[in-house]
Length: 451
Ligand SMILES: [Zn+2]
Image (cartoon, rainbow, N blue to C red):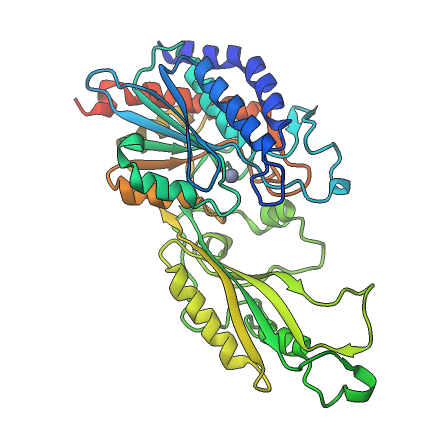
């Protein structure tokens, strides 16, 4: 096929892709404990059906111990051709407060060229990007294809990693496309070359056997909540820079957003300043960030006049790609112990860690992707970092050190992933699917094969 034929095949397949995305995003496949499992299995079944529909000769559900099945599809490589692995996930974040949604989260709704609904972008757009790119070839794929769509990425997605480690042959590939990120702005092409890792833990501070009347005891009795707040606020200085020793600021080699763009996407209120020092790219993609993501404290409506005996917080640390999440947690915990006032009792529990990712400078697959993206978007991509982590990426990198891992997708920064009113721009999805199809074609050309 010629590039022109590929482009028009993708364009012709878009109405079907949109219908399929609507159907898939209508399934509340939340793979978190406490949510019904049946929709997750329904999304797995539909993903399997979609992979079959594009003419992959081998498609199967792969059981993953302690988790939901992954869907695997494969078409062998034509002689002399490389194999590309395509990754996405079919589970989604919980919808959160339905009142914060303008449209019902699991009734995908088209408004001004964007499809609204939980999972429309993250990551069911990734699934439809793969499906639409593959469909363009009508079963005659230019390179070897493997597809893996996992079912528990959003919640402690580490089960598939163990599976990959035990079955390295299944996913072996020369290049890996991870369709679970996006461009800084719609139509502004980018490849994500770095992901921050993550570490999180729960801290509990205890001071008393039980709550005490604040009139009779306040002023002398040590308040656990006050102690915890002092400790948490000491993590940052007045400018918002981290005070924990051993977590230096990094530098990102590439261009980040301007302050104006960032304020707009982040919805920062007028008159409120940003925090931290260094360029925004450095702060967002190459440096540590500590956020208190939860507090177990009395609510305002349930407040009684008491000095608190215990208080808990969830602390999340984003770790730059080169950083070690375990060492990072140790540094933060040691710092919190040091700043703890009044000899309070402390415990640290529920630790989770995930490594970051740094792409190498780029080989043949990246060069092919640059050509494909330039054609689909009208300009070549730039490198960007992303704050989120995709746990499987590091496992793949470890298992297949020679494979090039390419991260791009239709989750632009305005897509509100993990938030209310998640949406995907359907023109962006078309450009991403076109990029993917052109990329597969480019990889089969003699120039990419180096012959
Ligand atoms: Zn995702």
